[in-house]
Image 1 (cartoon, rainbow, N blue to C red):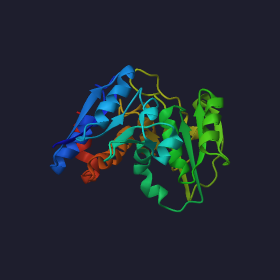
Image 2 (image 1 turned 60 degrees about the vertical axis):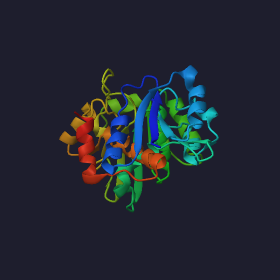
Image 3 (image 1 turned 45 degrees about the horizontal axis):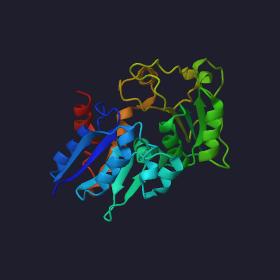
Image 4 (image 1 turned 120 degrees about the vertical axis):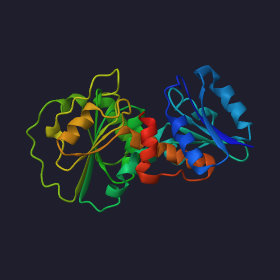
Length: 285
């Protein structure tokens, strides 16, 4: 019996998940399959009931617009998914019940693992955007004692998000426009510190205006991380590289979250040889 998983959403044709998971399945030579499935909002409940009864179904990844609406249909939530308030991975348990997870936080953190494994005097992340992706990113960073500056078009929304996810801790909010204009702020010595700038918004994505960030706001030695995947080389990353900053692109988070889900579906870690070079080539053709 071939075990299978899939990704659901509406629309779904743009998803790169089938290419990622199928690549790993073929590399491992396991008896498994991964597909995409268009599920409209009014079909979600029936879809999950049918799949829960199918013993060959391992689970599914969840993309928009279902990351919140799947929650009432699940038997349980992983604590991190509950904290984030969104599910991107559903696993069918042996008894047919469904458990919801969020692997976006783990996927986001994966390329930062080496830095976050070191000792620092201080850690700060400037996170630009207040959507669902930002929630997962904040939850992940807060697990590693990172002080947050959260910027959004609506600072009140940013404040409410931080108050919910980081109760009792001192973090900061500002208007997204704050980072668009130059500043003459003089950064102190950053030796022994970890600084991160994250574009967690759709700005810079195809069909959207670019993110406006003046690099006078960026501390020396910062890592610049853009979660946008189309285009992969965003204007933000181009400028950051030209200025000598280390950059992380959106495929890093996409592949990282898929790897965490793959292991939950098929009980085996995916092959991650040569920094995912072959997979990256496949995804950028």
